[in-house]
Image (cartoon, rainbow, N blue to C red; front, side):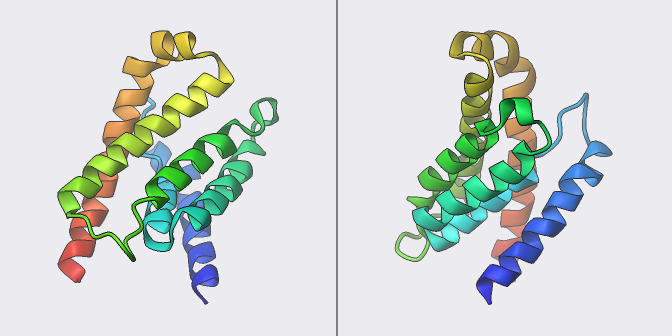
Length: 154
């Protein structure tokens, strides 16, 4: 039952990512809702589920750009695994630290993605300040809003 719920959430977030996020983009920078979804799933369900979710989500988005097939899957697998190590079933962390985890995971996702597409020096030189940091901040803002709503709900 959880898998169906997560699949529906993934489909809704994919539709929002490909349509709505373009309207709220600032200078071409938009929050990455799929990264937030992978972080949420992996922190709730663990590293193994996070890796498989990250791989599947990354592969779904890599199909749109076959020249870099696998780069998104790798980046999302890495953050799925690393954030899955913070398994909320066994380790409780404060909400303010979750916001930091979202920022670091989003930054790491973009770093792995750009480094696998180009090279590490080119990723730092061309994309770190103009793309990676703003995307990580915008994703963290969206994730922080969700964390605030989720903490008030529970």
